[in-house]
Image (cartoon, rainbow, N blue to C red; front, side, top):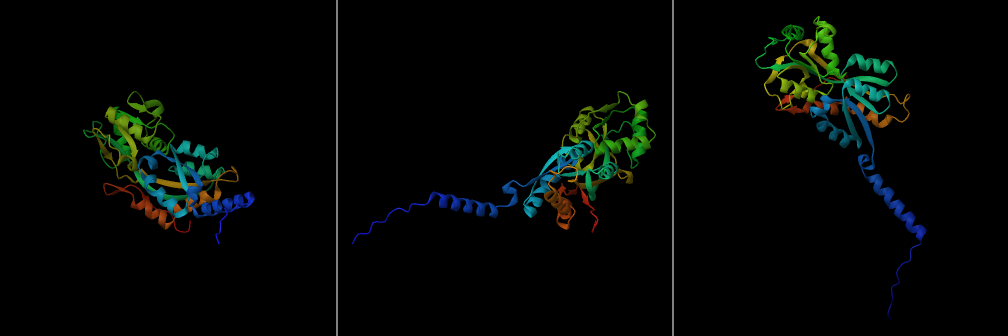
Length: 285
């Protein structure tokens, strides 16, 4: 007896339900990053240009399934981005401005993450005789010699630090600056490029200086002053002020970067066997 197999005719509604169930099961099996879960982190050019984020963010995504998309700006602009609600997390380096950001209700809480230091770079010949371990004496010498100095002038954390140092050195830029003092209004990398082209002095963070290759005749001339300490902090943008802030995902980034895993990732980042950032998150903070 010959048996003829007939094709199964699926009920279209059943077919749609089965397909939807299969799709949802597949989606659940994918990591969150593949489903489009991401946060926006407004941060500094120093953390981005140093290569730190390229090193640590894949580890964050692997641990949490969340993608962190970084917008690198000067600290002032990064904080303004948070004030507008255009970022979920702010990761910058100007403690006074950061504490004001939280006090004004734009940030939930500030956590210390890591530190490095600032340096003054300049021509190897050091025409201003600025070389040494005293940042204020170095700036006094540069100003007295009217030696070319390039400033970021971009309201960044580095620029804010530079202005504090000039003031502490007794230099009134409103009165004393002239053609010798050049303002780029740009990030650390472009500012260093300008200093290299002009064979000029500049204040830089060590994290950006170490991987910088277009040094020309420049080298570090001032370092080691405790006043050159450079602290970084991280804050969740306040969802009470901007309801669209990704509170849970943003908090996971904050928690991870100050956790032992995040701190270890930061410490492990090196260039030519030199550590660029030193984790110092406070336990239990």
